[in-house]
Image (cartoon, rainbow, N blue to C red; front, side, top):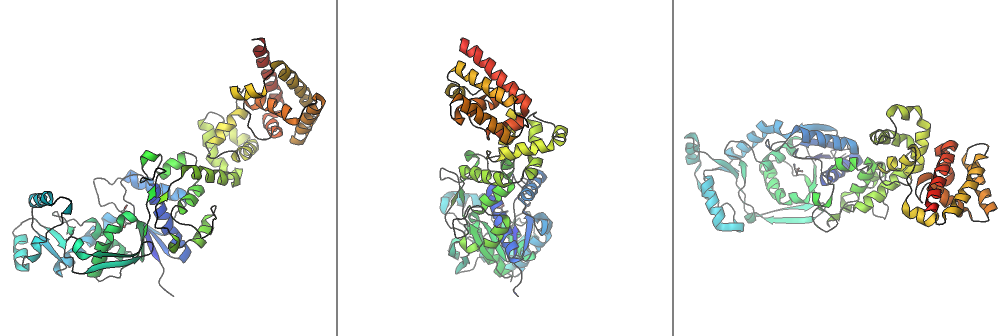
Length: 481
Ligand code: GLU
């Protein structure tokens, strides 16, 4: 049996968990789950100035919320510092790297003169070892640069296929800074070797790092992993997804009322498809269907409209009991019901959620819609009133008849409510809609709501009748004007 696949997600804790990072994490997670492999989480915190604990916390929280559990870690890159340094020193000792004594001023001047074409001119490559050792011993500051060999560096990317770099285009890059600390590529390669990573899947913005990393693997005598670079995520205007386009943090979507399973499904399809036009998939189905070969080279567009559509689909399917813990705090925040009140009327709230979830595209819309059922009165949507309450006197009279019919219903349940309304419509000689629509506005303030029988049930008989009375009073005032 081949060795298990070992993949990693290696975020830098310098901000929130970006949706692009979350997609990278997800694809790695799917590959590990599918192959019975190992998913390692590594926090790349070597940039001490920009890394924060708060950011690490946000990233871990975002991953847990999405359900992207890791098998190993979190490892912190900074903990490997002695190893990174020792390996860079080994490269120096073995002549795969050399000391560079050029001063920053000297390099700056050359950089300015060369402009965009600048590449280190390898001036210090030729310094004999004995002289280099002497200057270092005398305390002359230096960096350590990798000695890029002649030739080409190529790999078969699992997404972008054959990629080839002429080594002449790769500068002798620094691996240790003047203060002796290792540079990014050195730390990443050292860690990926140490952690036995077999597949590196990451954003395509890292393609330029890959040849340098491959050279380091070879110089260190380690097996080169397989690479898969993921296409960029764009906003609706075709530019790289950024704050300009709206929310880009996983946490923002949680606050906007997107379910984690929606976001996982949505992110999976940003650059990958299962080979047919299937869109809604559970994590289990995605794990089964996922294949790196089906990842697109083409950039993916983050379509917020589609995300909301998909969330509506997930909301409709999710049992009310599972939505309750998400929705209950929103009810409390909106001042609709306290946690205790919800606990006391759980069955009612579950019923309410069941009715409203199918009409919502975000969990936030559930309390928004619920207000009508929980508040004391309603406000009438002027447009709906203008359309369905055109003749105030006639409407009031019809509502009066409906009120009588409802007051006479024996058992207050949907079928009986509907039967009473049908009877009222029949005796008025009008269609059901002519009764239901004016009543719907009286009860909810708007022309769109769940079935009128369900609305009546949720309000209870007393409040249903009180709302009809209030509507008739309003109509009387309006008719008089
Ligand atoms: N820390 C890098 C980043 O956040 C990822 C490095 C890698 O995946 O190789 O972009």
